[in-house]
Amino acid sequence: MQSLQNNQAEPVAGFLLVRKPVGITSFQIVRKLRYITQVKKIGHAGTLDPFASGLVILAIGKQYTRLITNFLNASKEYRATLVLGIETDSYDCDGKSIQAEKKTWDISEIERAVLSFKGNYAQTPPAFSAKKIKGKKAYELARKGEPVKLKPQLVTIFEIEIKRINNNIPYPVVEFIVKCAKGTYIRSLARDIGVKLGSVAYLKDLCRTKIADHALKDALDYKDLNIESIKKKIWNIK
Image (spheres, rainbow, N blue to C red):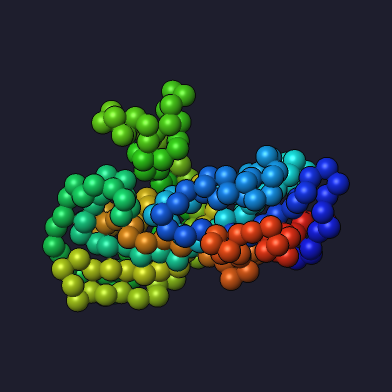
């Protein structure tokens, strides 16, 4: 990473790694940065839902927002936790519970199901997503109770590693790390793992830990954003 001198056209310009906390939107980070830097042109490389935390890459200034596609198309890594036996309408912890069933599995069954998703597979995006249906975002229709039918899309899971399985509770919990290509919904992956096991599942927790080679450990905390900390952390690609 290379620090930048202040751009003549804009007070601050470059890329910034920020750690998003649970409970805010990615756009709230953009809005806060606009206020702090007084730069209007700011974009981010990939939305994280409010329930999720982790790495967001921000592009500050016109010169750098034009390059944001480089990160949008990059691989992502996540640390995730799913709960088996419960389904929500959004496939995550922010949704409404619509089904629950207590089932038991051997640890080996769960392991095989999770690891079977490594590679390419046809994944249906969640109804509560920004996918467009006849010009309207799917989540706008879903919130109105209108039927949402999205076509499966081919996604790629490069790596998937199980960190822990708690199988001694009514609804087993699985913690795993996944590295995937652009366009993969980890919420849908959690649901699909449940289906693979003949049941349902939802995503309880999600943290993005990497975008390409950029890691969460190098990010600036959202609560620590100020003009001085930004100037110390801002960087560019040459």
